Length: 189
Image 1 (spheres, one colour):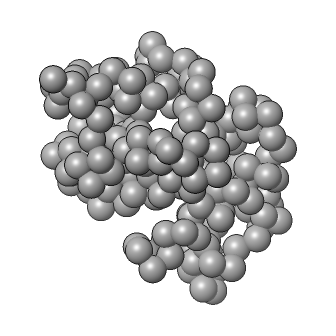
Image 2 (cartoon, rainbow, N blue to C red; image 1 turned 180 degrees about the vertical axis):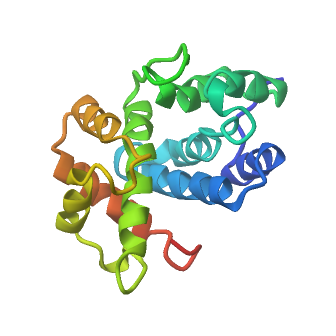
């Protein structure tokens, strides 16, 4: 019977298909940021949002060239509910062969923050504190404009995500920073 895993169960599924610390950490960060946004916009479904964030890249380590396609098969094989599969794989819309378009607010948040958490994290480790605790929107915006910095983080996707959410880029950056700060003490970021 298909089910929706708790965030803890989702992490165990992520670990079955990912061994690199980077991928596990990224899942934790995106899950935490999704939880932050859920608390503000959909608190009754916070765990669902967190599990979606945890599992969004479940296939990336093993199948980077089939990202968001193999994830569907992996999650179906784990007997995960189709609603979570669609939400998690929607972040690849327009970049991978994902068949799922971000339609729900939560899916648009995932689309927007996936790449942005990487950019913010890269900017944070350049600071003397090496933390998001004291990073400012202006610092991230400066790094956002430098296409060579964290070149793997798509500025186009981040901008498109802000447009999907109908919020200014600065607000998206600020909220994502605040979401990442909720993880301080729970994990190193």
